[in-house]
Amino acid sequence: MTASKETPGPNGWAPVPDYDAIIIGAGISGLYQLYRLRELGLRARVFEAGTGVGGTWYWNRYPGARFDSESYSYSYSFSKELLEEWNWSEHFAGQPETLRYLNHVADKFDLCRDIQFRSRVAEARYRDAPHGWDVTLEDGSRHRARFLITAVGPLSAPTMPRIEGVGTFQGEAYHTARWPHAPVSFAGKRVAVIGTGATGVQTIQEVAKTAGHLTVFQRTPNWCPPLHNSKIDAAEMATIKAGYPQMFKRCLETFACFLHTPDPRGTFEVSDEEREAFFEKLYATPGFGIWQGNFRDILTDRRANAAITDFVARKIRQRVKDPKVAEKLIPKNHGFGTRRVPMETKYYEVYNQPNVRLVDINETPIERITAHGLTTGGIETAEYEFDIIIYATGFDAITGSFDRIDIRGVGGRLLKDKWKNGLETYLGVLVEGFPNMLMLMGPHTALGNIPRSIEYNVDWVTGLVRHARAQNLTCVEATEAGVASWTDHVKSVGEGLLSNEVNSWMTGINSNVAGKQTRMIARYSGSAPAYRARCDEVAAKGYGELRLA
Ligand code: NA7
Image 1 (tube, helix red, strand yellow):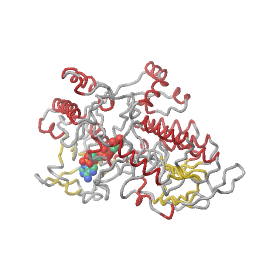
Image 2 (cartoon, rainbow, N blue to C red; image 1 turned 30 degrees about the vertical axis):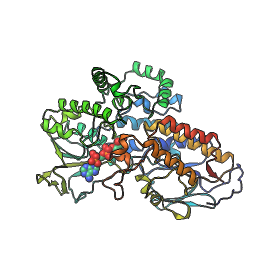
Image 3 (spheres, helix red, strand yellow; image 1 turned 45 degrees about the vertical axis):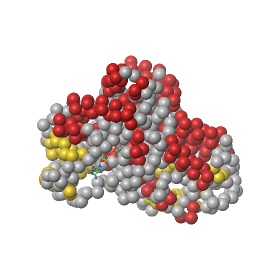
Image 4 (cartoon, rainbow, N blue to C red; image 1 turned 180 degrees about the horizontal axis):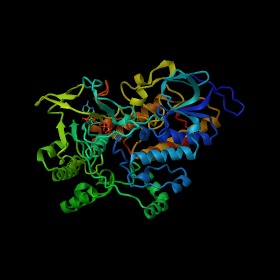
């Protein structure tokens, strides 16, 4: 694109209508981005579809929703005062506590005065004079800003299954990510859960406690190790607080910003006994240790992966009484850790309860949802009646929230079209042809322990905006060369990783969305420190790889 510098305004930066930046979304990234832009003295406005802050933790109110990473490692780290005053009650906090935390953050920093709730962004159009974005909300109102910052979340566009009759059910039906604010009672009810990802597992183990009868419809089982959650008392919280500086430093050093980091040993560099003892230790350790802190080669070497896979399969067989049910719960099409590992609390024991039935929909596919339940076919035709159907069917991940907004860059080019034949970004933050659009947790960024990645992402974006203002730049855009080189890099670091050979939301697959059946490398799968080093280098060199005007 061609661009010329606009006439500087009284504050040295060319004035734009309405706002310096519009941020879409008031989740963890949107809140922190607003805080940082305000620090710069900029006029920022957040548009949020929900009625409150929290993003993921606002929408996902389903029973049993909780962290799989340690609560304290999930906190914002930017404010010492905030760290000091907030006490987590559990090592892996439940959704209500996390939402309370995010509301506390919003209140403490008086963020809500710049957030407009019940405001879903429908369209965003780039304009050349002055450089910036016109944003239209679903209610038709229009707003202009110099920068468009997307804080839409990688897992926020829920998808319903493509099954005939969805919508005809006359009982209660809920998608886990659109759970009602009022409590839902399962007591004595006939409940169905469709989906056994991280969300389904948490839901199932909670609903099974009170449901009259629960039927789980499973397409692909996942490898679920125990979470081992526990309470945090005042003394332990004080110790955790005293260790915050070291803890956050550690998170910045590990591969994916978790507290856990791979063991430097290879799986077969130890004796059989040592290996088994190490796996046992990890299985008994709280959190993602068994996934993120295992032998260094379990996610890249097929034989190593088969060893841990076999170990976890044996655990499932030990815990599930009916061997036929146990076999159904053991994944056959992917190894341990190659998809997002759902952490569980007595999940497998649920299938020993008399009020729970597991239906493998590979044998008996769901044919249609009916007014009173659903019907299955395949090897056994059956008709089920339910009071409640829960869809734990996941998200149109990573690009879904972008696709749902009509985002058009230079020449009216639709972002969705631009990405149709493959994702192309610069550092996962910018897209060529979409000047002044900056993505937080966009495609091709490092995800891992999300708040840690978000803080870095936001700080980098803030640095770029600060630079633009200091230089009176009104247009920042990725170049074709920069995009080509980053996209190649993302592909090359993703090679050899077993998770990129498996269908999951992490590889851009969603059976319920047209056009999302081809596997791709959708996230940056190199190390977080390497990602940050590359982004730091770009900033240190004055963002010279960008087209600046
Ligand atoms: P996931 O992990 O995408 O899981 C969705 C589940 O729903 C998964 O078991 C799917 O089976 C199942 N599914 C999806 N569509 C259908 C249809 N049409 N019929 C039957 N079953 C279906 O989403 P989650 O919400 O659990 O977790 C997403 C992330 O959020 C999670 O990784 C955490 O990081 C937080 P499939 O595996 O596709 O065969």
